[in-house]
Length: 136
Image (cartoon, rainbow, N blue to C red):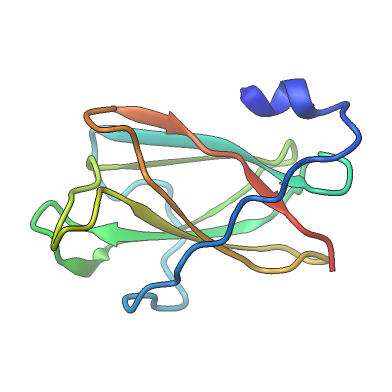
């Protein structure tokens, strides 16, 4: 992963925040798949020293293939002891002049909540997205 090369640097640039959007719903089910065709992987790290943030809770939600937001396309994954996470879904669709995207909300003890979005490359079947959190 890209994050491995950053592991020994002095610090990491925090992931830029993005809009929560109108379709966030708390308590997404604990699961790492809501479909097939697109795989997302990454690492959750501290901006202080690029160390992994284990047990971070990553909530993901997205529109279904029909462009509608439904509970079937919501999930929570938990970063492992190395800070790594993975999530599988259908390829994110575009809708209402919005580019394809996945909403992400990350929480972890001792860190500020991160709300961001991933905009996958058009036509890609996988992506890597490191989530860099700011300590409290």
